Image (tube, rainbow, N blue to C red; front, top):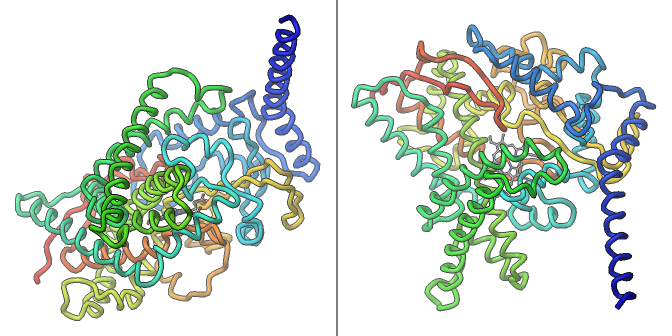
Length: 513
Ligand code: HEM
């Protein structure tokens, strides 16, 4: 008996010692090692605090910078959105290191190194533990958060859904949903409302489009799921703030409990859709799982033997695509309409082009979308000035050599997309002006325009998003003219993506048919 107790105690003590060593290594030794290696190479940065690193400094700089609205519409917003980047790059130079909690991050603005890193080192870099943990209950290990072999497999599974004929089929959903949005705008105008907060319309529209793309005929249940996911996203964002406190994810806090409850509810609804699709195929009512994204994922799962693990991947993927594909596109559309409303000459140029390409049709001919080159220039300029994803963080999992830098395993590379997009050095003196003409020539420097990231791990939904933006904007602009309302207050802020704090109020006028 004594021997069993002694053996159990030994195991327990060994486990405790191992956990203590892992925690010390994770919270102290590894970060200090990285700091020393980077300092030897002349890369310095602000002094971190225990556990929270530079998070409190960032939070206070940002909250001061965005405390007031801007006096007028100016696109000179880097000081406002990334005051910490401006302060630290002025003090420590173009490359500096700062601490997101216990995670050291190397800020990199050198376009050549960025290009090299994103294209060459994809297989040894990815999403950090902190990023994965922060989104675990929300999007799980879907494509956006997967690493290594899992990422490779998932990417190859979903990529075909966003190419060629499949993409064109999704275009049909986009046109139908946009028609409904235009109808509701017309109804609002008939009731005498000429001022509209366009962000709300765009958010609803892109959510409708992604629900139909993912769930086809189960679209209404899809919308219910996405409503719950939006709630879940807000709670998860709150919980993420405490991730630097060891063990915080196990705290029985009210939001941790609510997160778990919502997750269960979302997955229950997803399972109902999946089970009904499987039933239809098994009973011969349908000969495939469907042509929507869920159908493609289920087909793939069946080919792989269909274990419970795969089922979890399918559910995580459905949640990921809603998250990654809906808010980003809504934001792009909201900023682009704001830019077109405040630049009437460009609005007219786009309208003239759209009329020529539509050639009397009320809906865009799918095979002619590539001819909307002026609109494409405007969309690019909008994403340059207001990139929905303002930063790209990637963790390095193996020691690598990047240009003249030796990057140790465990360091995250932090690419400040917004600052790069506004750099006068890279874009010229008018970097903060709206000038779509700069995109007239296709030969722009690689590494300086990164709205969709670049390299093998770029945005898999890029063509989908551009097609969606072209369809929505072309249909909108051929029906209405719009100007900025006097009530619009320019106040970009970052809440995950870069958003207008008070929305974008526009005055709409129907055009003669
Ligand atoms: C204007 C719209 C969009 C922008 C600006 C955008 C931007 C991005 C960026 C910057 C990334 C890389 C993120 C990172 O690795 O940290 C990304 C990845 C991703 N995006 Fe998008 N995106 C947009 C629309 C979409 C749409 C419409 C979908 C799907 C329907 C989508 C699905 C994804 C997925 C699944 C990933 C992860 C890809 C991977 O890791 O392999 N995105 N997006």
